[in-house]
Image (cartoon, rainbow over all chains, first blue to last red; front, side, top):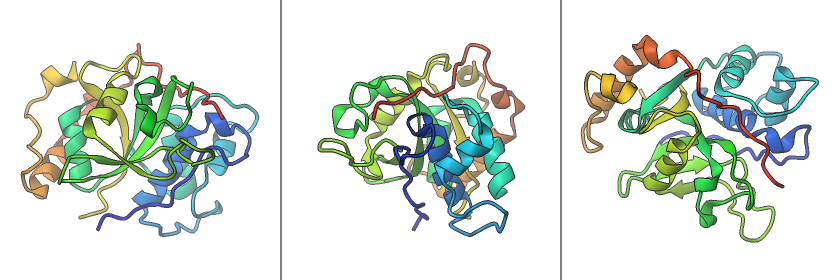
Length: 190
Length: 49
């Protein structure tokens, strides 16, 4: 069975929490990449959004991107992910099927209500995708906003239909048509 | 853009994992997908509590 990382919510009360979708998604990706094994660096293990944030921007908040987060994970956890832009959907699917996880950038306004972890928010967001279910093609999505903090907000990883993930990823502004931008973990299933 | 340039289409979901793995390994070697498009704003926004 594919290793499942510990879910990390971004709304953890830490500095910049509501801008920490990138650090939270990468905390889960780093956990998956290492299959939970502590790299024994001076940084805490398991990874946390706040520690990644504090390494990246110790004196400011605001959104982050894939490259920033990858650089932080490489330094902090020896996790060097593969950041790629304009990835055809079918290749993304192959990556997940073959044993990689991925942080995917999405436009949150495309996320339907049943998966919506922040009603009223429709901007750029990042989620971690851990695996694909062959029976129906759904993806196990770790949305850092899905913390169940109140009624109607999902809690923890959710199986998103492929069409939902695809539509949200395609809608990321500036993304090539029919493609996604993603940061892939190593293949942990070899 | 990348979809047109892709040399070999990705395998169908039903194909063996090893076929997917090989496709992805070849894809990741391609340098052109490493460059961030100039038009892309991939900085995330602030969500609402």
